[in-house]
Image (cartoon, rainbow, N blue to C red):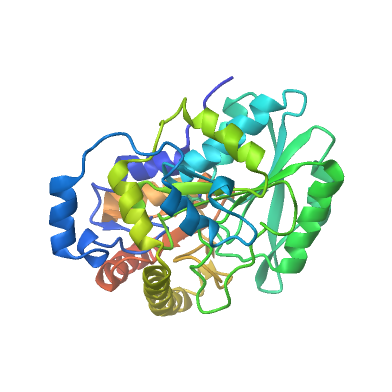
Length: 376
Ligand SMILES: Cc1ncc(COP(=O)(O)O)c(C=O)c1O
């Protein structure tokens, strides 16, 4: 068992605080605490909260708020985790460990590569199925998925809306995936962390209601602009697996931070949640205009599929340089950071995040433009 470097997280960890313009973020500009609760409340909380361990699977009010987003569930269908990262970790660890005779996970590519690396590190076998471009949109290769799934497949892992493409799978495609999982009696790990960051369209359908064995993972990091809370969750209609996952979290982080649980309970209150989702949609829609104009002025170099959700896009470029080399040239020559497509399992692509400030975006793009004009 060998731990592969998680290249996407590594390059961000090493460079995001050293460059002048960081366009690697996949969420929107984070909120200040004072945008969530009043200053009096902050002072009271900070002064009066006893920093004990919090309820280890998340407080009941928080789990009730999360469960209210999933029909037919209550607080016992939810476990609160430290970010979407722990939610994915627990899901993969639990499924592989509890089912040693079925060690294959079929994952969508391109993708955030956590489950990909983790499955291998935990002794599992990863099999890819691809999103492919067709008629100006990304579509899942359902035939490829059918071929990849075997009786040893314990889970199909999808990310919808997808990071890095911004693709949104519609209900017919989700149903086709659910049917394949059903036939193989496999779980679906559905990472829905960007659900609610649609650029104008309707809310992305959830996999939750389409198959019995679904673990939906998500967090407050992207759509809600609160990554620093490190607050995520797993929801399943199957309460037994949620209970099982809880005992796995005894071995990871024990519980969410107490202050994060309190602030999350504010953020997910229906009125505040609606405000945060609107903020994200406005920011994403507005900055996409800037991003698109820039891509269009470099149409000799880039081809792109319009992202349907998430403040990032994944253009393909036609320069004679690999994506990792190009990104390191940008770091060293222009002090701009973006993510190489190779770190998502796809060469000759770049992921550019546009969810932060407009000035940061315009300046970073300007510098990328300067460099790419010099490469043939
Ligand atoms: C698809 C996906 N899942 C999970 C995560 C991890 O999220 P969190 O910051 O909530 O741990 C990320 C972070 O970029 C992501 O893109």
